Image (cartoon, rainbow, N blue to C red; front, side, top):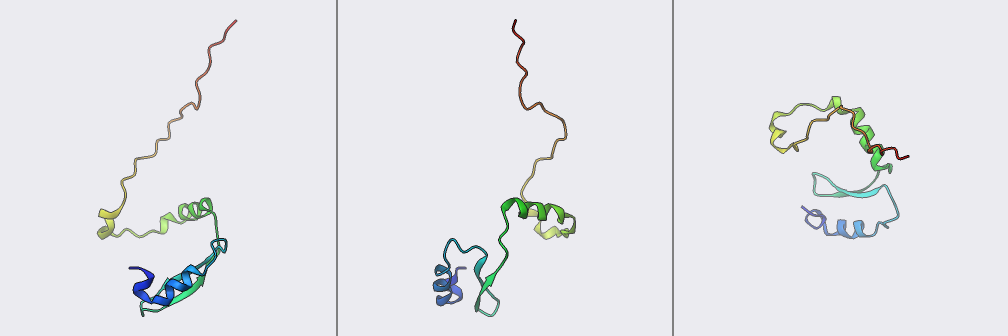
Length: 89
């Protein structure tokens, strides 16, 4: 679904938001209308940190299991970041 499906004037409202104006968006609602909304702008790192902090609150919904990405297990083994150079005399 696109804004044009919700209301043609939602498209006009969306393209009038300047790219440098962060935190403003157009959101459609269940009535077929739309609203201009504001949200605080945070960095991607801040968003990841908040998600990780509250990950334990995520409910287990079995019906959504087929849509979860396959994630490799995290390894805690220490791996040297660089090779040590042989000493030369």
